[in-house]
Image 1: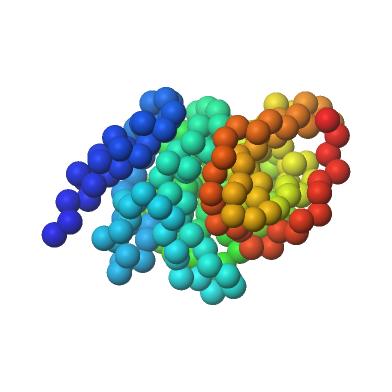
Image 2: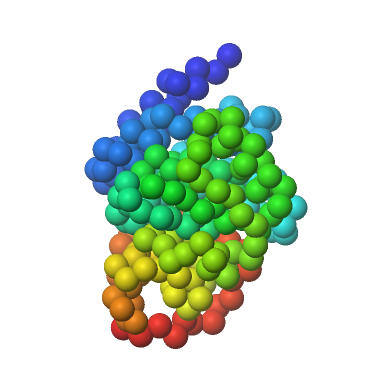
Length: 222
């Protein structure tokens, strides 16, 4: 039988802490949330491996669970506080939302694959996550009716961030996305200030693409 508690501790100590993740709240969340609960039962043995896990889905294209290092580093970029409302774009089977729920006041978990959304709801209920709501819809459109958001996190790479997503940020809000038009991507931070958006590149990251995003450049104002 696999000792998932030990595997989770090893993940934190070997994959998260050594890779510039210093926010103790994120470290505590990743040490507490059972990652194995958010993968299909036949894949639990590889839940803590140091790479992306391909998840079966019905929405077209491969969907993945991000590797722990990239997941933690992207969440850290968002600088989430306990008072924040967060939009989790492409929540998949719910692992990212379960982590964010430990950091924020509330999480809106957006998923385009209805089967994945249903699984995310079921698992988060089982895990006692009561401040995250799973909603279905196109990922590139966000979920405007519940915004604006203090932080928006994209769980996968995109060729460009649509203006419609950026517009769902509050003033002072942060959007975190990996921008990639090939194999290599870079984590970007977008910060809203009134009607302008500042952009900063944070680090290189290899992350699988989210479905439904085009390469059209956003028309945001610096």
